[in-house]
Image 1 (cartoon, rainbow, N blue to C red):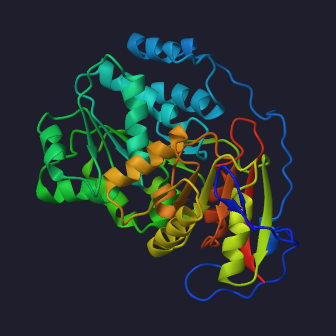
Image 2: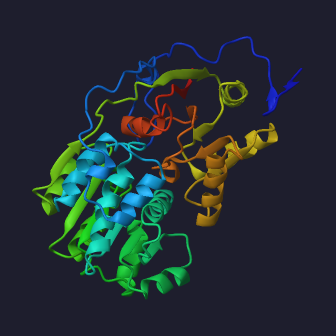
Image 3: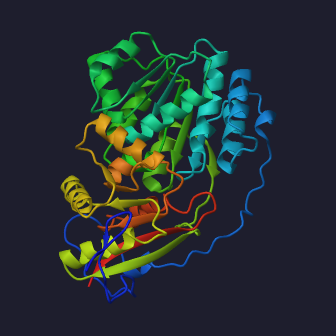
Length: 398
């Protein structure tokens, strides 16, 4: 008999859902084969010993309004990526930052850019992110850091009405944040001209290339001011990323933070299952565990996300979902509910969840396996934040 819980109904099971992985046949279709043994690793948290911060925020020659907002937030010591990037940015240098989500990279590029805008009336900045959620997140953080400065801005996202965007663009905003596709749409329409934008940021360049935006990135870099300061951020640096960046910014300074292929704070394991019913039951057993406080579950397709959300709702779980087929308003509402804790389970596709910065996720569940090992690293990096131990569980069929 099932027993009632605060989240769903517990099904008794005689077997543990976790066990040693067996070799798996290479899946058909796109994506690389990943040996399941790579999904198994015990968390080995280490003290942060590699980088000693050289500055406090008060050491940086930032605009007083920015300093006041930083102090109001209670920030005293910059993270490693902030410590190095802000210093270089204030010197006017191009920067390549290799850092993942949760390292403080948004403030690393936003503070020197906002300082320049506030102290040079001719400066204008373009910040490009691969997904709507990440672009919105950057916009929120920039507003917080620039509070009280009245910097005119525009947020250009696909899936949103053109009307408000056109209205904002008519004000000749000093700061434009958006996704590659929608920014290109405005260029094509003639509603946005980038020739006077002398500050540019491309966040998560590796993901933009993975998503097929390489032509758009090149186009935007060709349209911004020839004499400009550029910031590029990426979780990984491969030949594609390096080649693209060096074409446009050959003298950029490289700043690297954390190059390990997995998070030491994340306990990684596999969940073996035999068939659809067993898979759903195993997921249920994981979600009702007391230590599963907040979980993000990855599905491969939009249809898979919808189906799994409906299944979990029918089992009594408090669930939200995000994927590229949902309107931006619905995606924003789902994410806000997850961040606030109104829902404790979020089902998502890789693209929709890219760049999400939710600090208290305890479990990352790969209900379908990622296409590449880099995708796996991006997924599990959402757990084990702020020195806490996180859990990454990957479903593997027997």
